[in-house]
Each structure stands twice: as C-alpha cells, then as structure tokens.
Image (tube, rainbow, N blue to C red):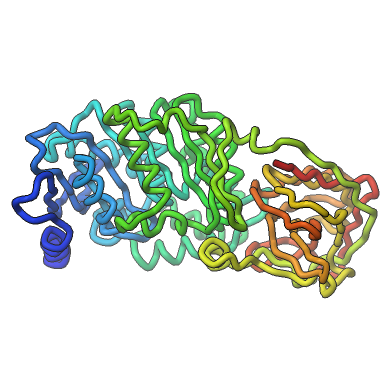
Length: 496
C-alpha cells in the first residue's frame, strides 16, 4: 500500500520541476519497479529527457545512500536530464525503505543490482549501453566503485563521500570508530531490514569481537578490486568525514590507473555535496556534471586538462590544484619531541569532536573543534609545542608522529591531535588519528594522522597532543596504567 505516495511525488515533480510543455528540451519523471539481482524489486525514479529525439541517451545510475530513499537524487537527476540529456535512474538500495530484499552491506547482490538497473535502463529508459555512468553519495558511492570493477559497461564514476576500505574506515589502526558504527547500525534498523551479514556483524560488535567482523571488509572494499576498475573515476570527500576518513581515499586514488579526479574540501560525511543532490548550485555536483559530460558524451569542456587533484583548505581558502596527492606536499619539517610520561584511561579536554556535527560546523561555518591547551591535564596527555610560525604557512599532506612508546598495560589506545594554537593557547583541531597497541614492550609507532590542507596564521604554532581517551572511539586504555614516550620521538609536518 506504499505505492500512492511515490506516484504522487512523481506527479508533483513532473509538474513542479519540468519546464513548460512547449519548451524543448525537457524531461519526464516516472516511478518504477526494477527487478534487481534475483528479481528483487527495486523502487526507482526514472528521469528521461524529452525534446531530444528518441535516444539512445547516456545513462546515469544513482544508487541511494545508506538509509535514504530514491528521492535523494531527484533534483540532480532532473538537472542532468534537462540540461544535458541524460537518462537517469535514482533507486533505493536493496533492503531499505520500499525496495525489496535485505541489507547485505554492499555485498554481491547489492553490487549486482547496479548491473540489473543498467540492463533495465537500456531496455526501458532509452539508455545507451556504450555510455553508462554510475554515481552516488556514501553507500551509493561505494556501490558505484564496486560496480565499476564488476561491470565493464561502466565508463564513468562519480563517487562522493565514499569508502574504499571498509576496515580502515571503521576500524582505524585497530580502534573501533564507535560513533560511526552506532550511527550506521541505527540507520539500518530504522530505515531497512538487516540481512544475515549485518546481523552477525552487529552481534560480534556488541560482544566486543570486532576482529570477527573484519572478514566481510575485503570483498566489500573497492580497494580490493582497484586493478579491475577501467572507468574514469571522480572521487569527492571531506577532510573531516567521520565515517570514511580521507586517508583511505588518497591511498586508493593513487592506485587508480585510468582517468581520475580527486576533490577534498571542508565538511563532514556527505555535507559538501548534500545540496547538489537536490539540484541546487554546488561545486562538487558541477564537477560531476562536467565529468560525465566529458567521459560519456565526449564534451570538450577541459576537465581532462585540469590537474587531477583539487583541494580546498579545511579552514578556508580557494581551491588548489596538484598533479597528484603526493605533490600537495612541497617539503617536510621534522621536529623533535621531548620525553614524557602520562597516566592512561583518563579523559582530557583534547577530543576529536562528534561525528557529522563537528565536521559540518567546520565546513559550513568555519567553527573548528577547539581546545585551550593550558587546560589540558598534563598528567593524562603529552603536549608538545612546535616553534611559532612568524609567517603564514600551510600544512599540506599527511602529518606523521613517530613515537617511541612504552605502555604498561596489555592494551592501550592512543589518540594524536594536531592543533593550530594562538598566543593565548587557544587551538583549533587540524587533524587527528587513533592507534591501539597490544603488549607492554617498547616499540616505535609510526602514526599517520589524517591528510589535511590547513592554513596556519602568522604568530601561531602547531601543538601535538597525545592522550588515551576519546568519546568518538571505543578505546582499550586501562585506568591506572601509564604510557612513556621516548626522547627520540618526532613529528613530521608536511608543508605546501
């Protein structure tokens, strides 16, 4: 009995979004049921161009994000159809809302669904099998990359706020990203029907057996099949993405061998491209349109001659272009860190912020996760100040802390935070990263913080803080234990 609402939405969209009947070109919208893998019904908005002949038209397939319905991309789909003559299918991923099946966490059936939607688009929506693009945000973005590796018909991909390695995203350095996992699980239960893989993974997670969840990651991670991707790939993620942080994306991007474009900008998960999905002006979706136009329609719009890496500083500023992510770093400054010893298992005011909220505040309003370094409890956190930057500089690349560490407990989680701090000791979080250590012996830990481009103001300095508790993650530090840092520890700061 859910059909009347989608049909009404389709009718309203046709009336509100479509140009006058006499205008040409235009588009039409319909609400369809498309058989996915195994015949599973997938509910879809199908937007086709009018006033452009009978086709075939370049076909763009947009699988929905985790927890969202097919309405997610209708604005962008209408714009693509009306302005550029694409046949576009925006569909609800299996297991969610009124599509059939169960959530298999981008498993074989979900990936095969993309190919079945392409089949249907070619047969029923005037799609051209030689000009197929797949795109999406978050869950749809990962599906687009996985489908490109599995289906050679996919010639262009637009993957926004994507994961490329599921384990690295949600279990960085053997540390559970608790807020992210809880958010995904809650959305899955609220809007969908978890299948066996998700139910078993949640049970293991609840019992503290996160390592038992890891085997589901490789077949669901585009990084596993990157060599099979021949499509032209555009990836756009945010510096502060709390679900799929940028380090796994930059590494994946370096391994792509075909035409590619990487965009990194301020914000959190899906915030940089959110309004563009609704058809509103948006820098990310503008690039998506140009990407599809060039690689599916052969439009000479110059995007192939632009530098493939486009980055916007996380604390404001214009886009910067580089031939590769590695080229974003012009030089590296290595700074010594003094010996220190802290107590473990006690929180401090140094924190990474809240998933989705903190990054959104940074992206939309330039409100960073802040700290007052004089108030950090020095018995529970190591604090190292770098020299004052008397001229403006830019951190550009992946900062690395090389720490000689001696923990007293069998399991210890460390959280490294890099701040820009002014003369009063007030700081803004530049980047961070957790790591969980097993055993009590002394070892050298090379901890890569998350990639970033950040402008440091004249008169400010960088401050590295390492503590053992962070509300975003599920750490393993033991109250009463200690952690010692050797005098040969260093901080490598990439500059651009």
